[in-house]
Image (tube, rainbow, N blue to C red):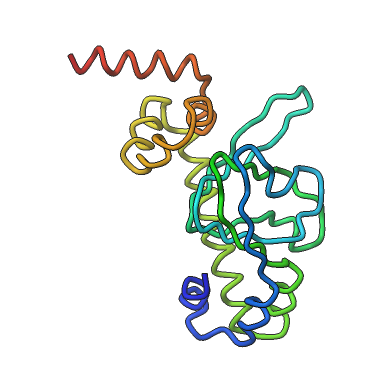
Length: 189
């Protein structure tokens, strides 16, 4: 985590010891929320190992997956930077090992040190790029193309989580994913 943030900032990060002392390493069981939707998420998470679904809940009870984070990766709710409730939840799809870092500490470091501010700004820009790519994928790619890209780019994800979670990620139902896989197998024969 330190090396990624330093690379984003382009320099060493002052007061790194504060982060080390404040970080709490957590083992999160499969199915457990790292933070719930609708509540203030007080921590940012450095996911070291495992898969975490980032999900929106609809008023009618449906759940939409906006992405699946995979260690090593930092995640959190942007709303937490301004102490507002998160618009989504983060749920462990596998056992997850993560370091929880108080968001308030990161914000304070960014206010105090320009290098921390640069690191946070660069991380936010990277997040915006990821979101744009995800939106483009969901709006412009067919389910077959999304499935093929997922198989090629993230085979470890496909192997580690359920078909239900994979289907949610590519924006189709598990039944539609089964049909898609069967159609592709039949085509390959």
